[in-house]
Length: 475
Image 1 (cartoon, helix red, strand yellow):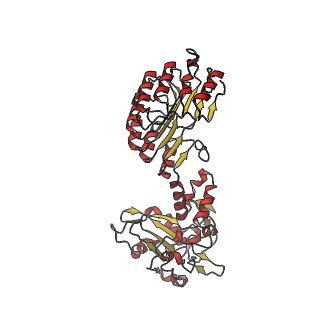
Image 2 (tube, rainbow, N blue to C red):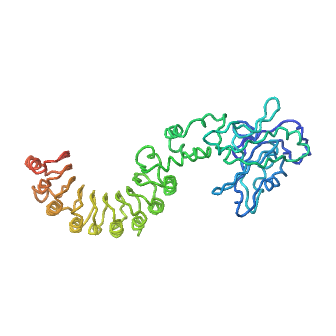
Image 3 (cartoon, helix red, strand yellow):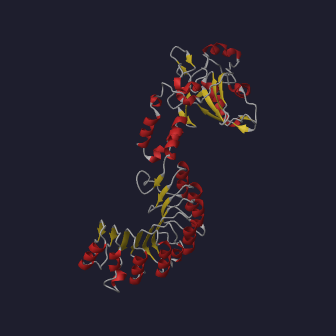
């Protein structure tokens, strides 16, 4: 026994009752079986011409497959909004093997037909007594799915006695659903309802979960529903953190999850290129939040993202050193709903895009980011009515007078961060005192800030009565 095209091929020993001169018999004595040892008699036939372009019927299929052996039954399925397909059942496994071995040569209306063995639980079986059970489906149709059982396949065991006449007994009635949709006793897991299967699927690791859709049509629909329910894709946390992103993998996941609104691809070791932004823009039309890292920004790429994702509210970019002010200016101007901007590790920029800030921006975070402070002040003046959260982490360009202007323009700030700001301490020991004027401040982060003193803390308590979180570690 050896494998051919994912099937096991059994070699029969000795003579066969059909005889060596039978034109439908494989001279090598081989026939195909499924992975669990069931001889293949029933074949799935796909890529059939549509009804509009070809008058497809049972006699056409019979004329195609009768040269390869005795055809016992043909089940043709044609629906208005689906591609037609069929199941062809042969009298012997050797006949089915002949058709499979010539599958690249069988065509209809200039279309090469796709042939593959039907699943093992749909295959006819031969009992120890020699009797062949042609139909293994349940005899009673489901009450709530009566449309799936219009007619049963007739018992074709009598056709075996007429095999010498080489006449195919073809049944013209056809089922209304694919045979793999019918519940079969030989596959116990199919007895579970959809909810149970979904719970089982969620326990399977993502790489294996991606292959489940290949099992059968029902599993494919369940897996598709599972992925379509994803609104958030985060490749920095489980279960997706083990996936090393490339442009191709990102494109695959985004097509699996067309309804994504939040996307985090900020992996430290990703292999994404500038093409990733184009992929995101093409597939995520409802995106409202994106966080990316280590991606080269090409000219007009962020403008394309803004035009393609009009609902974008949050934009976060880390270690994308090649981006420039022009691209950020385009993003800020075109994203009319942008509420949050976070940029980290940006060097050799003037921050000209900051002058383009516009409402309804509520949060601005800059970490180790170079900018011209005049551009920052001009931009904050444009969004002072909506800005509520402001964060500067190790921004060496920020000056003492800039902090005072910011506090005067935005007295309604609720969250403020001034971490690692060594530069302020070089000029004025009272540089951070303007913060105590923010009466609505709730969260304050002064980590690694040398200017924190007892007097400042007392002023902070008096001036910020609703403050509920304070970080002064390292100060």
